[in-house]
Length: 331
Image 1 (cartoon, rainbow, N blue to C red):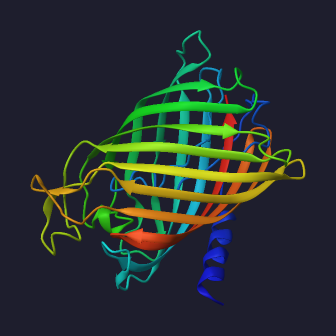
Image 2 (cartoon, rainbow, N blue to C red; image 1 turned 45 degrees about the horizontal axis):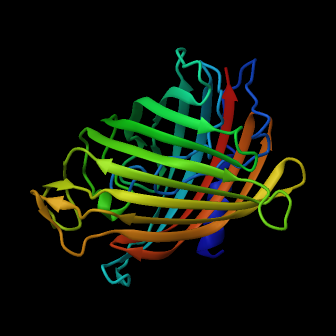
């Protein structure tokens, strides 16, 4: 069995363990039934934000006290470390799996204008396999996420704009998913993420073709006292550079409840990382990943499987990544 099929098999095995809370009074948005819910591999380079699934364009008018819950599995197969020129400079074998509870809760107090919503967004990676650390790692929480959504004014496009400060509280061992994250960090993190999601429907000659692009910018607020690939074996005050991610999902319907398609994601540093206040030359990070996606959606319940393979890497470890998401929106 080759590495790719091992990756798929492990991801499917994880899917059997998925559990999603449900309750009466499920909220269903008719505009998004069987619509596409996207997932991102690396929203926020350098900020431990490799687990940040998005909902695509969040629909307007979501009722107060709505909780969109998700529980997902991820399996990552690491390949070689790629340097500033994009070529492999050292091996970086191994694989790791994790389970991640995730939620987006819309507060009881909401504006009368259906376009604006205020929410709390949270998730906690829990490393499960093939890692020197295990269990919960960082509890991420955005105490005040501000969302502007529009899903009614333009019939062929939904979009939402998202802005939130994030707090990363250490609740377990060290955790670093890519080389730019470093290894051995157990302190608090503070960052700010903002961006926009779009859902463009019925595009081109194919009825039902959707393009779901998203753009996210990450600003790191505090420096991290961690071991980095740029400082050797000694810990140093390291500030990851800001980053920009552009994700794309193209999909078509497969029957009434399924969608199938492909994702193409691009991420890059917009500012250089620093150590002790000095910029690190030739340390900018960029990556491109592509892969297939398959989604099942029935009312408020959605299951999404996504595979992403890096085809371009600079100053980071190349990855094969397999996600399985389960979403449920309820009151």
